[in-house]
Amino acid sequence: MKHLVTAVLAASILLSGPARADGSLCDYQLAYAVTVEADRIHLINEHQTWRLHGDQLYLDGEVQALNAGERKQLNLYRQGLAQLTADAGALAREGISLGIEAATLAMAALADDQAADRLSQQMATVAERLRARYDGHHLPAGTLRDHHLDAVLEAEIETLVLRAAGDMAGGIAAFAWSAITDPAHAEARGARIERLVERRVQPRADALEARADSLCKDLRKLDALERRLDRFDLLRSVAASV
Image 1 (cartoon, rainbow, N blue to C red):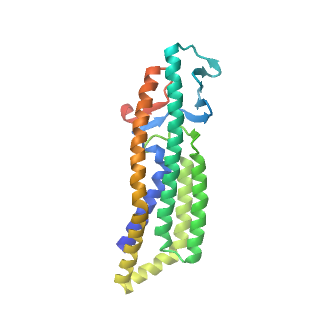
Image 2: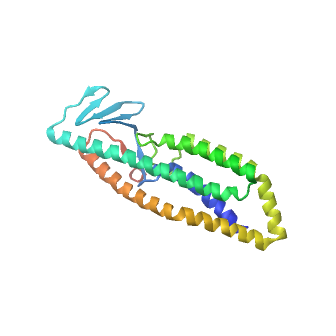
Image 3: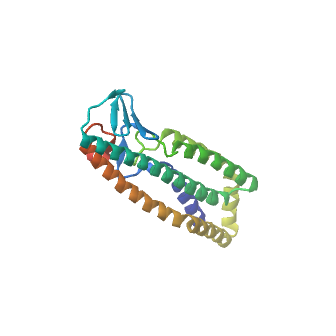
């Protein structure tokens, strides 16, 4: 029994964790929402809007005076931020896919065929909605803060978990009865599911972790360039503010 419970819990963690994959990078948060359009980037919050267009900088529509060195730095920063946005989106989408797959494998073991099909369809729908939020062109404000979970994503996951719990109620009861009447069989079944999840998920999870580490390094370089520009404060270190 403990093996199957472990597998389900691990899958649940994977499902919620990568959904905020760009939320645990180096204890940073975004002070603005980011939108990337070709050679333009918009930084928007409730107070002001910055636009980075090529090597030009605009604040609320007004061009800002920059010398040649600053324009060069701004252009490098814009390119780096565009790449970071794309990479963070790709990382989040892969993490979401991984979490959905792990959770489906684990929870399907507790559901009958019809419930498993419903679970798969529900997860696919949620996955598409989550991926759409991390399309490589947008980052909502605050998403780089490690203890922040986007409220919309949290609601999607909570709804999915509640539906799945209802669908699995019969399967959980059956499995619990099986653990009483034939504990060896139940334990072996749980261990098989756990191994399957680990075999299919762990290598990709390790690769994701390496990509996140690389993205973290890029983020710190971008932050250093932003501080040299000293025009706006998009990237804020949570650790530094504590």
